[in-house]
Length: 249
Ligand code: PXP
Image (cartoon, helix red, strand yellow):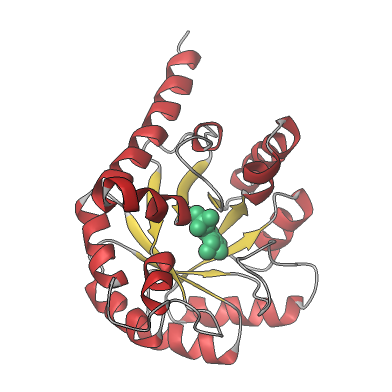
C-alpha cells in the first residue's frame, strides 16, 4: 500500500559537527531544527553518539522540548542511552549500531546476534510508550527478525545504493520494503541520500519516511537550510508523483 504522504525527517547532526569543530555555540542544531520544521520537514532526527562527536546531551534535551513536529532519536542500544530515551521520551527511537572508529553509521544492526538484549531493549522502549525502529540492511532475514524482535518499524540502510548505484541495491531495497510492509512493519529509509539519488528510493511505495542529513546540511551552505529542505521535498514529491501517474490505467 502506498503511503500517500512520504515524511521527510531532517537529521541535524552535521549542524552540530560544524559547531563542534570550534566548540563554540554556533551553528545551533536546535535553531536549525526549527528552521527545517518551518520549511516543511515532518520531523527531526538526531543521533546522540556515545562519543558525543556532534550532538551533545544538552542538544537532545532542548530538541526533546523544542521540536514541534516529531523527534526521532538515533542511538545505540546501551543502558545509558535507554535511560536518556526513557527520560526524554522522543516520539521515536531508531536503534543503530555504533563503532567508535567509524566516520558514519556504516552498516545496519546485526539483528541475528544479541537478540535477547535487542528484544529487551525494544520492550523497555515500548513500555515507555516510544515507537521503535531498527536500522538494518535491506536483507529479508533481517526484516523478518526485526518483526520477531517486536520493532514497530525498520529503517533500511540506503548506503550501498547511494555509494554503488546500479540495479541490485535498489532491488534489495524494494524487496525488503515489500516484505516488511507485508508482515506489518512501517518502512523508513536513509543514509547517503541526495537530491540526485533520492528519486528511486522515494518512489518505493511502502517507504513512509526518509531520514536525510548530510546532503541537506551541505546544500544549506550554498542555498540556505530552508531552501535545501524544500529542494529535497520537491525531489521526493516529484518521484512519487511520477510513479503514481505511471500506475494510473
Ligand atoms: N539514518 C540513520 C540511521 C543514520 O545513522 C544516518 C546517518 O547519521 C542517516 C539516516 C542520515 O544519513 P545522511 O547524513 O547520509 O543523510
